[in-house]
Image (cartoon, rainbow, N blue to C red):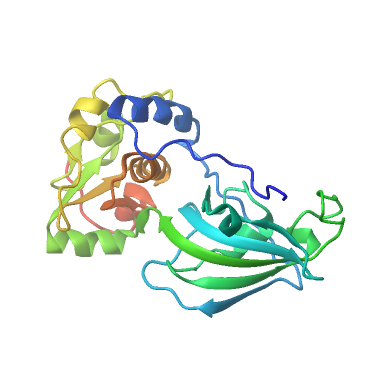
Amino acid sequence: MVKMIIMTKISNKLSAGLLASMLVMLAGCSSEGDAVAEVMVTPGFEANTVVEGEGRAAQSGDEVTVHYTGTLTDGTKFDSSRDRDKPFSFTLGAGSVIKGWDVGVVGMKPGEQRKLVIPAEMGYGSRAMSVIPANSTLLFDVELISAVGINNISSSELKAMLAEGNLTLVDIRRPEEWKKTGIIEGSKKITAFTKNGRIHSDFNDKFLKRLEPKGENDKIVIICRTGNRTKTLARALVKEMGWQDVYNVKDGITDWIKRGNPVVK
């Protein structure tokens, strides 16, 4: 059997201290950029749904868990998580699996099954992999078991949520940033990252220990300047702490102000 995917899931749930340690490593991408890779679709690629799923569709950046069986076009089976009775988890769109998977699993809902036809350019290319000859088209039967991801919201969606209530809005920027632009009225000011990208010393006590969502109507919305720091933080809270009702304002307070929404200083 060929082990198709090259990524190891770290843990199911971390303590607040370990989460903070992990965020130090993530903080390098907290100011700019995102780890999700863009993938070009090659002619011949297909993703056909054979069983419909239900619920939230998988998006790039989600931690997804799947069962799969991979075969060649002549019917030779080269790998199967089902045979091992062990589903596989990976971060969708992060480039940790073959390109055909990063494209083909996007949009799947839990319980959905797809047949993927992946040309060599989106698979292993000219490399031979054990029983997989070079330049092989790969066929996969994939079933999505779960997709855990970030709830990314726009400024207009945040405005609607604020009108409805039942949320805690946390501005995770630094004091000099709050002073420069102001904050959205009612925001809690809790700095997550220092200027050099380290976790702020007050973060555990002020955020993790006090703001964990307690129920369906208890939403945590986090905002920064452009959405990059909050995306890093939201991903860690969802993947490692198991928080669910965490919302990232994807374009940050910069977009909120650009659209003429009010702030207070």
